[in-house]
Image 1 (cartoon, rainbow, N blue to C red):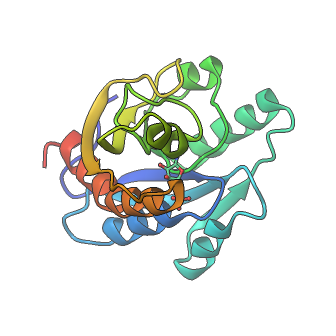
Image 2 (tube, rainbow, N blue to C red; image 1 turned 30 degrees about the horizontal axis):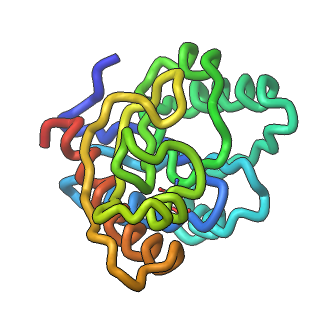
Length: 193
Ligand code: GRF
């Protein structure tokens, strides 16, 4: 489907599971004039997700799906997306893997942010693995979501130099700061702005 540009902002859902710092940066970005998107729905896989606070703070509709049975949750999400005319999904710290069924049946675009320089270090515990392997650089990537985990077409990346005394925690903080800038940049890029 074609993304809507011009006067109307593209209606977007952000999927979270945890802190939601990327959600916060996307909400702030979406409220700028230059932004081609509006955030109209927050989906969480976890009712304890700290990021759900932003739904209240910024008055955005939220829905929680526990994914105990993935196919049931996904069907319900698909109908929610349809009901809310959502044309873009931004996964932002969403800790569930969306099935092939979901990706095939959602007619909009799905993006994800991952804290490594893909295609290296797909999956979990990226910072631990990067440090253990004595890499010189890590970073973050925004990519399209396809049927395979962390494997869709790359939109944009930012490199971050690893310091000698870095721990997974210190590295993740520096990378997260970059993520907050990179996701909005990726969105501008896919809209050719
Ligand atoms: C980010 O590092 C993101 O790349 C990864 O999970 C983290 C989520 O952070 N997938 P937050 O919930 O946006 O603060």
